[in-house]
Amino acid sequence: VQLQASGGGLVQAGASLRLSCAASGLPFSTYSVGWFRLAPGKEREFVAAIRWTSTYYVDSVKGRFTISRDNAKNTVYLQMDSLKPEDTAVYFCAAVPFRLSVFAPNNYNYWGQGTQVTVSS
Image (cartoon, rainbow, N blue to C red):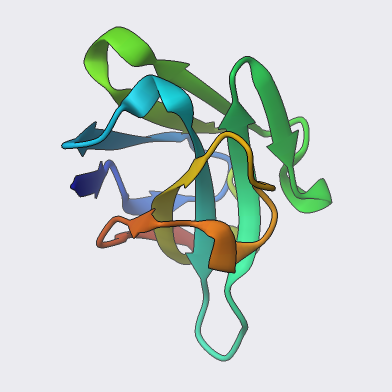
């Protein structure tokens, strides 16, 4: 099983990025996918998740980030708009079986390698 996260970069505040998480080796359509982020000096934080067609977001990104999935491509996307310096972090995607909560990091079976997002002010 492999999750490949990509799409990070260095942008200015207010800009947009789209992260991708491509999965292989698992029955993708039966898994929820979440995005977490890890910033220096902070704990890992849940950012967003998609379970079937239901989506979930941390309050700080609601209205700015949109998570979506394309099961035909085994890929989940995180569209990040109106980026802020406080969004700077390494972003990880992870997969969890549908029956488990998307909010608990320990529920996730598989993790990608992370992609760096840096937002300058």
